[in-house]
Image (cartoon, rainbow, N blue to C red; front, side, top):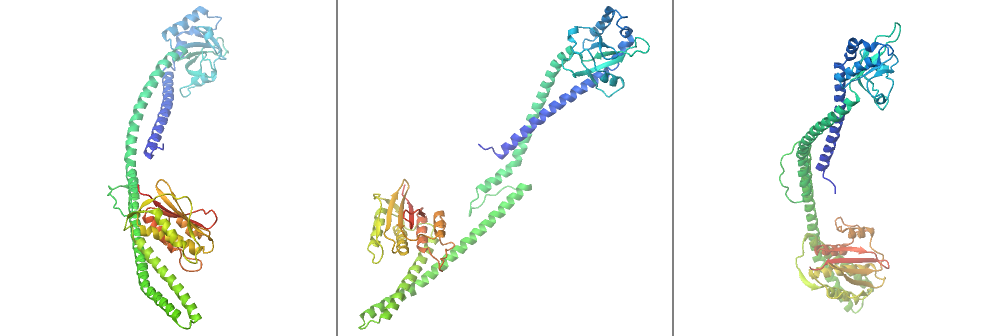
Length: 491
């Protein structure tokens, strides 16, 4: 499931806050530890020098100072302050004396570079060698002082005091670290929750205008009034204003397109209506003239030929004007005017029989298994007109291609009327529009030889759409064209 924009922003904010909290905790712990080391080393900076001044026996060489006396001094120092560890170093940094278990000393030599830097006044904290550390290079804070040389000309040794010994480090580290991390975790948790709550509230307030604008966009329907929106500021307000301007332009374009289409249909209806009367009269006079010539004692052959051509052209123009009038009327309608219940299988059978005995045309036959009684609701005359147009197109465009086959198929919700011929097939532009459900007349398809074709198919397509169906093509088994008129069945 894809998270919303607000949820993704909230998760990103929470992740950033957690990362920032961990970074602050780690850096803070290191800074605090360094500050504690600096403070303790600064406070104890003169400790080793004070010990040397008050216990001069530490400066005596090992052969001059008895072990008991030296151990007594070291024991007294570590009893006074158990947190420290006192080492006596020779001039090379080797440990000369240490009170405690000799096995606990892991490193027999102390690096003198930090010791000399400490004595030279380097910036604190200065970390030196911890002889009891298991890892070489691990160090801690210390205090150091030079011991008096055993003889004139000898290099002096050093008193080396580790201020945070292993025992002190373990106890203080265990107690202090637990308290530190508990306090840090508590403060981090409280800060994280507070910041997250404020951040979520802020994100909600920032994204609410975007959600409202998205809802307005989803709810937009052409021709419907948009609900008023509250004033929005900044970039979201600019987007809302741009969306309002866009919807206004869309509404204007739809209105202009509807007006243009209505005007176009009105012109077509008027032209077709105006042509019907004179064409009907012209055709009637031509038929009367044909009868008179047939009754004349001498039949002029040239007059009959010209009259036949004139009648054919007149009939063609009359048919086109009738189709224009029907198509314009259908396009101006948005629903069926006359609805009745009828047997579709009987209507198809009657239409096929009407064409089967037409002289000079190839036969039309029903094919496939009979589907049984099929009842539907709609305009019987319009459905018959659509089927007649499909069969008439097949006969006119494939006059010598054999039988035109018509068959029915039924599924759960619709019935499909198939009309198949073996002619040259439909132009690609007509097939594409039919299969995509696009109107064949807006804009009209111009024939390569001039004029506009597809009026019969356009009428059938519009009738199918008014009934809630469709008109499309199917792959033909023997070439030619296979038209499918799909009409929904009543529930």
